[in-house]
Length: 81
Image (cartoon, rainbow, N blue to C red; front, top):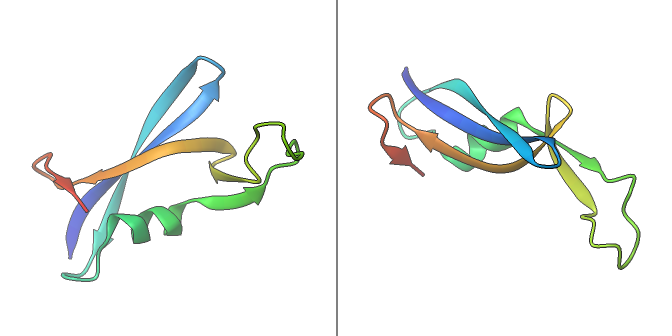
């Protein structure tokens, strides 16, 4: 088993965010960053959405906080797909 890290950038307030680092274990050639991302977040309907209000229809959430970006790195700190 190999270990990589999934980093989630979460909105915590209108002008601030936090980065969460999650260790992900996987077997060789089965890992993609997108797959790890989809397995660790939840997509919810945006209750504030209305046509033409510049709100997204869906929100990607991690522990009830909106996710606005993600990326993965290996144990050496190299970015991976």
